[in-house]
Length: 255
Image (tube, rainbow, N blue to C red):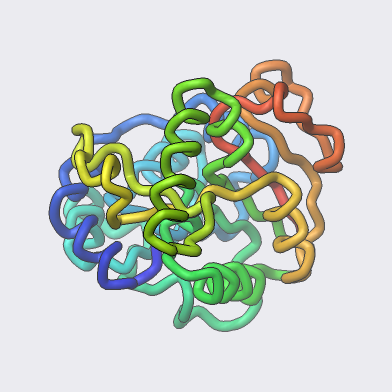
């Protein structure tokens, strides 16, 4: 993940244990990895935390794995879980990576890490870096917080209306897609009521697809839980409507 001070503070502090306690692959993660990745190819995960996804990929037969995270303590925990160093864990920043060009056949940017980066310029730089380290013909998997999915729910729609009002009253031009964390450390975050940091950015479907294409990626599949459960991912963002969207947006790309 990005090394912004707020993100580092969160994942070094209140969010540290929350992420380390996660053990298994989500249904959507396993579906995408098994459908679009090949176990023998060189793979890197961005924002690996304690290595949850990579360790499960090992169990699925993946052999040439790397992972990076900007939180040294999380990388230390990942290495502790891998005493024989079968996975190459490194401290690294998604917006300025040390890997050479065309280093990996497959890249994993799940766990919505792009959305945790705090500025649009830095998010774009992270996507450009992901493109740079992927080999021509390589495959990438991304997940994003989806604004249409969130805003279509009545309770969140009301909350968004409230946020728009208080931002207008105080002259705050922050995008309504830049939303406060509703939970911190697995508990309700009262600062969300007052529209205070930390924030994450929730992408619209067309917006993130256009951004991925602008970086150079070809989109080969996208969808949310609805499409994954039906095994009917689409290739064109115009095929998705708000009523079709549930949960995170997942995107498979090619370079």
